[in-house]
Length: 320
Ligand SMILES: Nc1nc2c(c(=O)[nH]1)N[C@H]1C(S)=C(S)[C@@H](COP(=O)(O)O)O[C@H]1N2
Ligand SMILES: [Mo]
Image 1 (cartoon, rainbow, N blue to C red):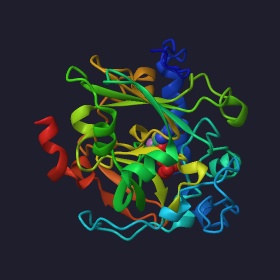
Image 2: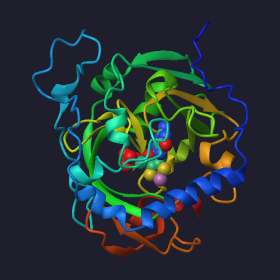
Image 3: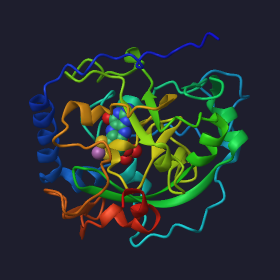
């Protein structure tokens, strides 16, 4: 059987040196811990295109969202927060999506026109039968629910937001991996024509990530298609992105176009760029260097980092 393989499966090793990457990340950290973090957020966010409006035109028109009627989805009460929800205006105007811009506060504006419909997803590798599925067919078929989760970036900012999405476990059941499959690899869309940050770094996109199948089928793992009760806007990784709340945000790959099941452990974007700084697992760990505390977006309150971001009850057993 012939399966179209999206660009990215066969990417060469990243061309950046770890030092370049580390310096780049340091620059971002410096920017974050500088005076501007919360203050910039208070400034009026640009008008964000919300693809979730209920009066969307008929689904066939390119760029419209035929699943807008699924929002807001039923909230799963199993996941409670220990802190207030981050206001949407803050969460959606401070984003990391380097393909668009490395300026956190510019990502929403730069990504606003990103075309996310129609959107096909390739499912392949060690599965019974590779297939391609439209993202809206996927959400409608598997169903979506809302969950309140803490979120923690490796650069020590944190937020708490309502994601809407498909439990990853249901997706794995649909994909039917072979028994020898042990990992699932994901790749972000390669659309340099629409992504102004694509060539502005030595890093080689597309972005790629991976989980063990045990991680992907853990109750917490979510393929998010929405946030704050409506479909994801582009800056958060529309139309579908990964949310694994016990890991640093960098594991939460955005705008996914492909899932590949493998036997060998796949490389991951930040780990291959700088293994010393970013491990494959990247679980939130307060004992790591510079990770003891975190700063909440919007309020700038400082909190002690929780092991596994407070989700040990669900996931500590995976690493025991
Ligand atoms: N494709 C892609 N996915 C990505 C990133 C990125 O630069 N490109 N940044 C990651 C990082 S470091 C973080 S903290 C989160 C940020 O998600 P948010 O902007 O929705 O808060 O997205 C992750 N997913
Ligand atoms: Mo991050």
